[in-house]
Each structure stands twice: as structure tokens, then as C-alpha cells.
Figure 1 (cartoon, rainbow, N blue to C red):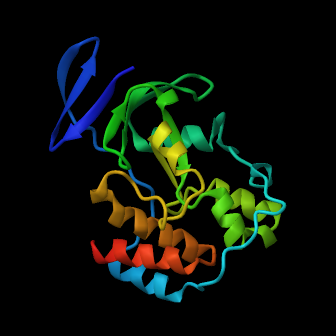
Figure 2 (cartoon, rainbow, N blue to C red; figure 1 turned 45 degrees about the horizontal axis):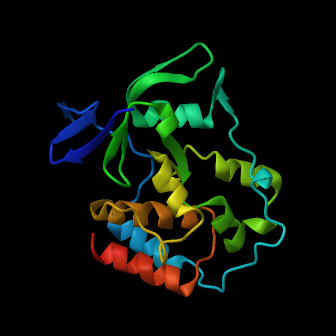
Length: 210
């Protein structure tokens, strides 16, 4: 396993006790990230409400990952989109490449160290209005490649996030929080999901720091 922590334009790769200098790879980003002004307008238009119940929730109600093209599913498609020099097998599994995680500034060379994060978590969506959606609508949300809803990040960072909203979890790399807020707001606006008061306050603070 090789983990690279970015420092300015150069990262130090530490493996087997040796240090190797590598240029930080340019990580791809999800499409449709709005400007600060657009995100502010979208945030102003979101409905503030008490968070809904988890009653009836199951990840199975958000079918993923689905086939996108040929043998490639959504996860594999995002791994190719967000990685650098990604090589895949005949079954579309990523066999090599580099993935820069903007949440924490780490770079990984094994796809198993990378999770595909739902920017707005499935459980958060359920509590915010998706409980009333059809299964087809929830499938579209869970596999959305057209909006800033899916991104490749360090697996344990994604796991620490869980289903939390920005009032209780934000990316460890503070310089990415502006972008994260804009992505979160865009997804909630696109899907007309509600947000709670503490969530809106956190998002506003993140935008103000952009």
C-alpha cells in the first residue's frame, strides 16, 4: 500500500521505510459544482424543516451500484473518472492507478483503499425527503453521475463521515470545505431535499469562508 500526503505541489510517498517524491496527481472532480453565488442562491431556496425519521430506511431502497456501460458499474466509472492513469481489467475492475482524495489530501495506489462517497448520504436523503420517492428515483440519486453527488475518497475518511450532515462532519482538509458545501447544496437543491437549521447554519459558514 502506498499512501501519499500532499504538501504544496509535491507529496512524500512513504513505503517500506523509504521516501519517494512524486508530483501530486490532478484528481478529477464531480460535474456541476456551482459557483459560490449560485450555491448561495440555492441555499436560500432550500426548505428548512425538522429532520425526518429513519423509520423504514434501508440502503437496499437505493439500488447501487448499477451498470453504466458495458461491464462497468457506477463505482468503477467514478474510479476511472476521478483517478489518474487508471488501468482496468476486462471486467472493468481497476487494477492500477492513483486516486487523490480531496477530503484529506491523501493519494492511494490501490482502489481498495478508496470509497465512492455519496456527498449527500443515502440515509441523510431519506431523512430529508427521499423516503417518499419511488425506488427508481432513489436509484437515480444513488448513481448520479451528472451532479456533484459521487466522489472517490479515502475509505476510512468516508466511513468516519457515515450519514452525517455538515453540522457534525466536514472534510478534514479545511481548504476543501468550500467546495464540499457547494456540492452538498447543489445536490439538495437538485433533488428538492429539505435541510435542518443547524445544517443550514454550517453550510452558510462554509460558504462565507470561500
